[in-house]
Length: 144
Image (tube, rainbow, N blue to C red; front, side, top):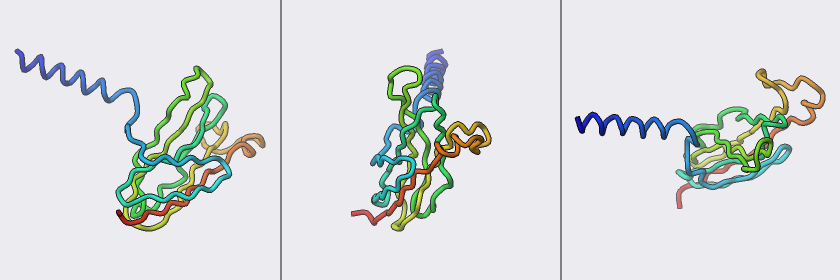
């Protein structure tokens, strides 16, 4: 009976841990980017890093990874969102989390399709003007 109770309690704890919150708790080295900007990033092999962009879904921001980078150089782990905590409509930050792999270079492009809807295509002239990319030129160097 104690085993069943213990097993049931463990299942409840595991299920509770899977629901809310981030998939990762360590963003590693955080590098900020913005629409229209190119940022250089240097990390070591095996180092976790995150590319962050300001977002506010309530005004229409919708950031996506344009394409997965060269997996030999950097592997994609997850996309995370954190609110600024100022209540509804206050915005926050989106983090695209990666791991540095083998030495080399790759380009990571993040796209904000502003008020685009499900098809991820700007439908109005304003949406076309407000949409844009943040580009990160990533260099992975050997472990030191």
